[in-house]
Length: 85
Image (cartoon, rainbow, N blue to C red):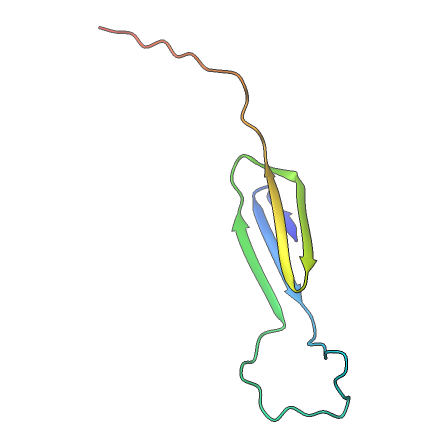
């Protein structure tokens, strides 16, 4: 997980298929239903109010969770004077 240009979140992944515990080494597959690519890249545009320094990611049970915090809005209120004709 990386950030490019302070506004693009990039997820890159890849790896080899691992056998489950208990599978025998001489086991052969007869056919594979779907062949997935071992590498992937996904890019996401981050909103302007995202806090890039506090991005966190964790992988649990094969699910990647990426958390991006937002910068709280400023407490200042803007007053705009509108002339009435």
